[in-house]
Length: 217
Image (cartoon, rainbow, N blue to C red; front, side, top):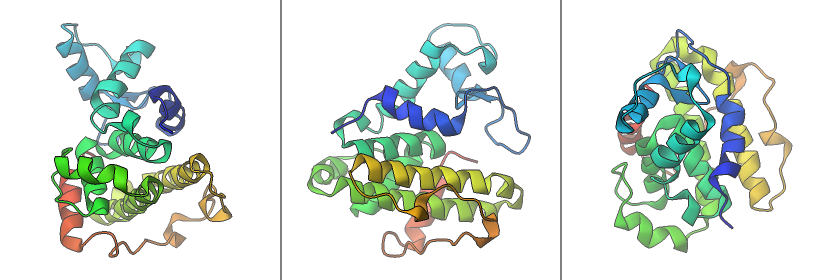
């Protein structure tokens, strides 16, 4: 059964937060409710409204942004709850291109970062929960790549991995699967968290294509 945007936002805002932040090491810069200033500017301009600080974003505005820029582009409302939530949260966290490219890798279709007919042809013929869990593994793989790419991003690693593991737990719960201790919130040093081997999902070459499509730089 699909979930609604409102239900998905309960999970995503748990991790994005609701307070204004502007961490010096976060490439997104000023952020509130998970909406970065540049996205908010884009939204306000498109609605012929003057720019203002994202700290002043309204509930209507952030819900509208989440719907138009993330929920609708990944077609979450047409998918099972586990996959719909995974795609939505991944789009918010890594961009729509990064999200859809991971979906394409798992489905074994050409990676473009855009919704294609190949996706539509396969998406309802597969185990969508299995697809969601594989996307979660690709997210975890990305976290380790990110820290190798930029050592200063290590400060965010544990939070990213906690979010990914919480998503795994939520996916399994939505699918009626048992939730085991291996997806409980992490309380160990991030250096001891194992990087997953995803070669059964995607090649190294395709991983690089995916990373180029991510919007976390």
